[in-house]
Length: 257
Image (tube, rainbow, N blue to C red; front, side, top):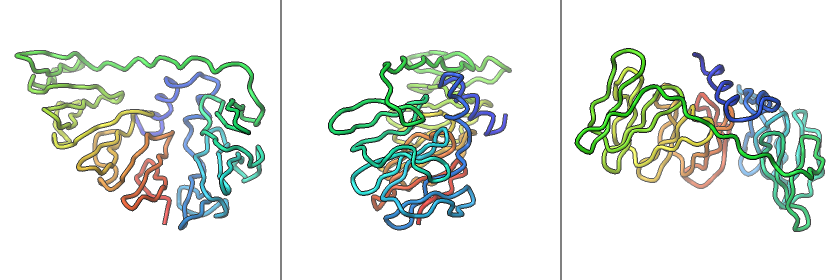
């Protein structure tokens, strides 16, 4: 299964059908930071919307939040305003709605910028895809894959499954990664592995710095970020070691300079 298909299928699990395409389609434009100012670039890093914002958020459903001074507003993919720059807080759109704050009041708006009066629907429950069964022996856990004869010996303290067949294994306080063939592809040296978001690109941490793995468990980026947020579609927000925000794409390419 290729990366684009996997991103789409995971998005279909995570959001209602009517918003799935908007939430999970590859981002046409990526927030791009030059110094302290922000614009938007395509995936070749070619600037498409000029660098004129004090901060910029990711596009979902062809709408993104931007900040000018201390206030936020929303623009479309052509850089045209969807709302005035008037909110003291503004979130990224998710499942067709975003939360904003105006004059001390917090409420949700729709993709047209209109205020919503009905409450947000409950979060959908996501059932993990199971690729096998845990095997317990002498206080340790292993894993037996459903397909084939591959198994992982019961020598770990914890095992968690990922959607695309990876196993995250813990020995003591350290984590590593095993693939669907039972091979240890990332040594048990990480202090943390985080799987929020679309669960395709796990974030890993060691000695206070974060990086990402790709969908096969290989290194996507080196451990060089102070903060690594979950991927939204095919981009993720990071904080560099010197405290500057920026975005990367699913190839690990950085969109800041």
